[in-house]
Image (tube, rainbow, N blue to C red; front, top):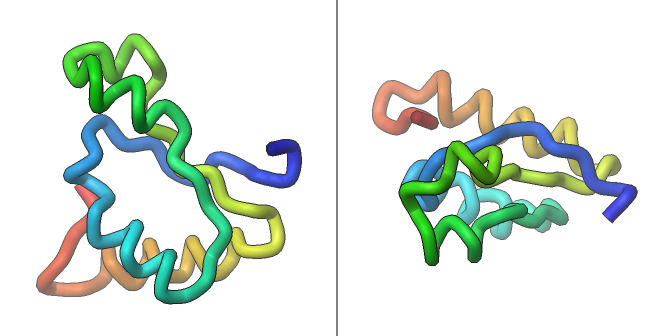
Length: 79
């Protein structure tokens, strides 16, 4: 996991459902840290530091580009 870097933090899994699909489509290597723990205890998300999107260092630019495209879209927004 030392080759992965946190580039975004989410509170709930519903906030990144579309992003996760787009990352998979673009073959970006990523993992959502704390995802399982927060799905079991959703009201403890802030205590765990949220769900951290960690991306492989070679894929960071592409992942940020995907996030920016979502944020700039008039139809979809990252919460």
